[in-house]
Every structure is written in C-alpha cells, then in structure tokens.
Image 1 (cartoon, rainbow, N blue to C red):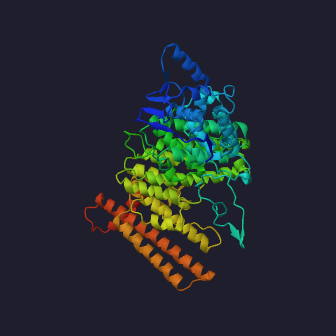
Image 2 (cartoon, helix red, strand yellow; image 1 turned 180 degrees about the horizontal axis):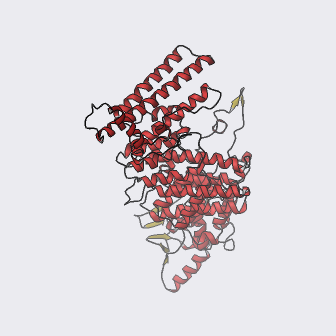
Image 3 (cartoon, helix red, strand yellow; image 1 turned 60 degrees about the horizontal axis):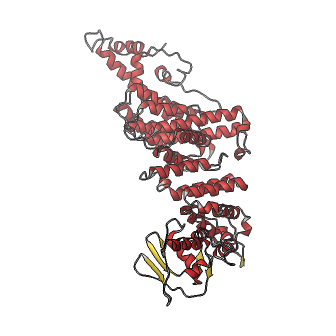
Length: 626
C-alpha cells in the first residue's frame, strides 16, 4: 500500500475523554470547533492561514461574540477534520488509501485551496492521487470502497470516475505487463502457480491468466462492482468468458451458500438486488458462463422471489446449453406446501426450452453461436439431444425416490425426450426400476404406461440380465427383453437376421405385434402378461440364468478364445434363452389349464377327454391363436 507523510512536527494532539481533543502547547487555545459530539480546542492562526471556510466561520463567530463554531456537515467527520487540522499545524500526518478520500473531501469543504496558501492540502492530496494511488491496482480498489459514505462529494470531485478508469484500464492491460500483486485463488495451472517454473535449471517466466483480476473486485459492494464492470464493458474489449468468470466469482463470494444451492434469506432485499444485478451484467454470448452457474442463479432467483422476467430469461439461456448440465444442479426443491420433494415443473420447462431452441437452430443454422462453429448444426443438435436424454434419465432416477411423485409427472417428463437419440435405454430402465421400487402400489395400467416408454431392444447385456430377474417388471417386459437378447444371440451365430420361432401368445407381446403371426389376444391374456411374474416363473428364470452365467464362467475359465468356440458359446446361450421362453410359455399354459378346469362342463376330472377339456378350449378361449 502506498502512503504519503505530510508535516514534520511531532503529533501533539491529545484527548480528554471521548469527546474532547486539544493541542498540547504552552499557548492557550482561542477557538472551539464542535464536529458532531467532539469538541476541538484549537488556535485560530494556523487554521485561518490555510482554510478560507474557517476564515468566514471565525468572522461570523466574532460578530456574535462567540468563540465556538459548530460544524455538523463536514465530510469524513471528526477523523477527516483532525487530519486537516494537523496539516494546518504542520504536524506529521500519514495519508493512505483508507483515509485519503475523506481528507480530500474535508479539505474541499474547508476550502484549503492554492489561492489561500501555496502547497495547500488539496494540492498535495491530488499529487498523491496521481503519482501513487491511481497507479496502484489494490489502492485504487480500496479508495473506491471508501467513497461509499462520502457522496455527493466524491462524485463532484470525480474521485469515483478516476477510480473506475484506473481499475478498468488495469484489469484489461496486456498480461505480460502485469507486475503488481493480486489475489487469485482459482485452481491454477502449473505454469500459473510456480510449481512448474523451472526447466533444466532455467526459471521460466510466470504466465499471468487473463482473469487474474476477478477475485480482487469481489471486495466491492454490488453498486460499485456494477459500475466497474459497466465501465470495463463500455470502454474496453473484454472476452465474454472472462466476464462470465468474474460474475461467477462474485456470486460465490457474495452470496452465502450459493455454491451449495442454498441462499440465506435473512436479508432478502439485499440478496435479491445482488442477483438481479448479476443477471443484468451477464454477457449475452452463449457459453460465456457455465450451465451449472446459470442453474444456481435460477435456484437463487426462485428462492429470493425475483420477478418473472428474470426467471424467464434464465430459463431461456439455460435451455440453450442444457446439454452441459449435470443431475445435481437440476434437483430444485419444491416450494413450501407442495407434497413432492422436487420442483419438476421447473426442470420440465427447461427441457421444453431446449427443445424449442434446438428446433430453431436446426431451422436456421445461423442461430448457432460461434462457440459451436466447428460442428454442423444437425450434428451438434443430435449430440446435444443425446446428452439431454441421458441427463433426463439420470434426473428421473433421482426424483423416482420421491414417494409423492405422481405417475403422470414421471411419464410426462420422460415423454419430452422420448424421441431423442440414445445409445442405450439403460438409464431409462434404471429410472423406471427405481420408480417401481418406490411405488409398489401403482395400478397395472400405470405400470404398463411407465414400462412402455422403454425400448427393450436398446438395453445392454447387463441391463437385460438384471431386467429378466426383476420381480417388479410386468412379465410382458421380461418376455420382450428375453426376445431381443435371443435376437442378438441369433445375429451373432448366423450371417443373417433370423427371428426365433416363439409361441403365438408370446410373439404377440412383442413390439409391433407377433412378427408374422396374427394376434387377437383377449383382455384376460393382456392382464396375465401385464402382471408381475409369479414365484414359480421367477424361480424358473433364475435357475436358467444361473446356468447361463455358469456356462459363461466356465467358458471364460477354459479360455474359449477362437471364433468357433465363441460361436458355440453364443449358440448355447441362445438355446438357454429359448429354454427360458419355453418355461414361461409352459407356466402360462398351465395357468390357462387350471383356469379352464374351474369352468369345465365335465362332471369329473377323471373323464376320458379331460386333457382336451383342459387344453384346447383354454387355448382357443384365452389366447385365440389362429
């Protein structure tokens, strides 16, 4: 910090209690000046030789036969007045960034001009400003902070504007010319923090990052911060990324709990003003700030009850880069009084904004920002849609744990991205499984509606293995998973795509119908297959799957490496899957037989045509296979 010493005489100011200040000298004081609650016992001669205003006040007091002067509006108060008085007495006084502005305003109030005496206080302070303060990065910031309580004096004396010019010009100086100290706590590169400063014994020049200045400006109150950033944007070229980094750093410093998504509401008006100012300062360019930062801002806007205009603008901006988001940033808590844990409406609106932006970008490629200039619009759109689909799948898996989440809200959000490209449906399967686990009492129709969103042909081998053993899934889904797993096995073992031959009612459960066979299953059949697997069916499935895993393990142990052994292994796997199909069909067939036996017209189960009575009518009545 720069400082300036004035005067040479020892400081002989003394105090008697808290409300009295005097100069310890043999000469009796001849004037009393009251500044607020403090009385200064002083001598007229040294004061009147340097202050035109005191000359007028003393003359007025003499006319009233009084030796006391009341001054209640001097800027800087008693402390600033004492600096001026010490200068008048020639006592040693030290000016620095913390007190120089108050001293300058007080000197202006007391009219300590060059016309009164050469080398007066105003002149010396201006020299200090120009030669030291405004040449120092940190002193300029400190001086700007001290101006807050000295309005309108600091505006009239152009102290604020000079501070703004000093700070903004230094912030955007060529980084190779930065040779002053600054605060910079961001995670640095090795070349920035000095840990990689030597190479073969030669010290390398340290690289100053472009955003070196952002943390120092966080010390400013929001109104001054706004003026600094506005000056920088108006007078200089600044990259949107650096400006975004500055605003992000300021929010993290000034909003307690912002990084964790929790905003303290003990000072709503102050924090609301801060958030609204940050929104106003945000650069317009897409990608200038991270999606995570925008989502935290949206969370703050909601908690602080900012206006709808701010919310809508943030939603629009987040929608443009929603593919960059991560699931934890989307977990907005539901408003007070809501039964649900999470604010699904907000996330749904963000997805809708993304869809709208993506459609507009595909219709007019010129809307794509330079941030994505190296990708074709359709390519970037497809990649972004795939990322958003994964994001929504992960979000659904999290909110599925909410016991009060209705099926309609779960399905509604999932359907928004149902047409988005996905490499696999494993994420969606995980979300569906979590929802079924946490909501065991939903109806069959609701369960069917949820499971219908999943494409079983896009499940990975691990997900298929889990799904066919999942007691929460309808048997219809288990059959479809097994079918597509067998399809994969068939494709592996043969050059052509051969559809496995399945019993008609099982084939009828597959997407698109029975794959060549007619389908006219009755309502009873639909209800059977939409139900969860029975204990007998799950036991059969697990037994066969255990055999399948054992066979794979033995195959790996024996070192089946060549293509013929791999083909044999795949063929065995296909046979086992077919066997599982047969067991499922046999189980369902037995259930049909038992059902028909209860309604049979035969008087005795030992009748000679019992087998026909149990099987044929049941098949034709319940499964209607032609």
